[in-house]
Image 1 (spheres, one colour):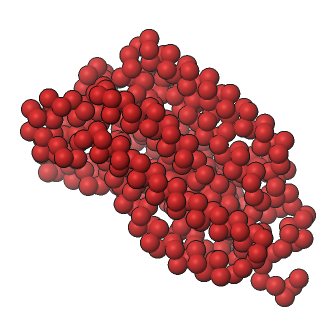
Image 2 (cartoon, rainbow, N blue to C red):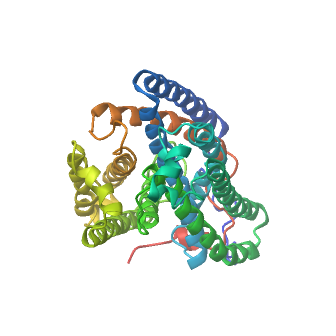
Image 3 (cartoon, rainbow, N blue to C red):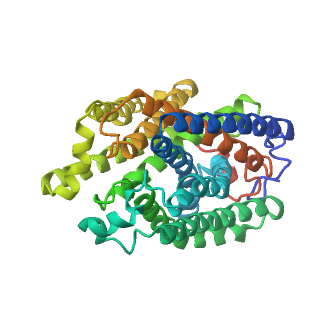
Length: 414
């Protein structure tokens, strides 16, 4: 045993590395039940208050859950690309979080894409053919703003993500049986082109789903801004999911304070990165003072939205930045869990702030807008959890024959 470079099933027998069917079934039923109830409640609320409000809330819910899966895909690819070792014990958690792309794709088509193809312009004003011809700024982008082309692009994005995620996850699971070290090499080789596909598809997705809500606005930094939220979300989610699994008796000896410390460090790093990108985007638009760019920010500094903008600065940057600056919160599970939940909530507020302020009745902030958003997140999130429950039960919670697992189990922060 000591002569091998990987940890076999016998070496991990002292730890519980299987989710187990009873827990998986319980999570699936609870997630599906809560999810369906949340979706019904959100649709009912939307029918009573206006479908425009529901459609925006649904976009926030989709983008929130999708950002976790996208962050998971980034985590897996960057892990292989740089040959990381500390993160091997939590890599399978990230791999499983990418299993939701097909379901999220179906929800996206049902709630966002098909209404646009059918002619509903309450979310994307560019769906209106008359506006596409009469508004100069929208007409200049007319070839892009075609509902059918929009649907094709969204299908391509989800197809790219699904193929990449399945390739990395299936190879990793196959290694659990074969112990073939060449699989790790092949995944490292594949990670470079996969990251390029991920970067382009994620960038254009952020343009299509979020930025085109206001089709007159543009910002070349917006995809990086969206990615920063995805990255922060995945490190927060991995920490919370791992703590939940340990609370259920899984991975109790495999993941320790050293790994949580690094997750906390990456949370801290991407909090700063988000703040840097947010400031850079705002500063460049403010400095250039072009009407097509400044109007987007102007809508967020009036009608009550200025308070959301100010709160976002504190919720998403100042408070978590100061809280995670010290070494100690990163090594205390209760504190790190609270901060991870805080960061995920901040990401929700950020997506809400991106999506809602607009024309057609959303010039003023109301509490109802945020409440229906939370209900929609419960709905989509419940289905998201139900999907992940099945994924987590299909393979060990650790890549038990990965060549770097021994190093990860013995990892210590210096």
